[in-house]
Length: 161
Image: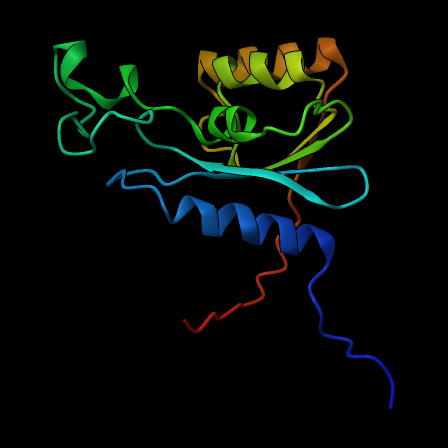
């Protein structure tokens, strides 16, 4: 008997973990997940977009179209990448790779660069034409952070719980 051939690739596995993490988000419009991985392919941290610890999901707005900025989620939500970075308690992230379901904004890009993450593997880049993502790409390029689009295998993965 030989080994199984239909196992997940590392990229499928880590993007799967990022996507599954994003499913924890209570955001009604955008669920983003992130998985940070060591050069040895060990998961170091995960995160998803949501409100900071101690800020109840019932007390803050999930909307995004109010004229009053304090009634929109954007000033309160912590993005998945920032959550994954802040959730890591093991020391240094230098040389790690970050798998994320949506290309990072400029604020998350700053944190990614500062902690020494060397590669961002992203699934979706639907905000590519926004100033925030254009700034992210410019900073990543300057800092030598490799930006790799995820090559989606379109494999269906079913998890029964």
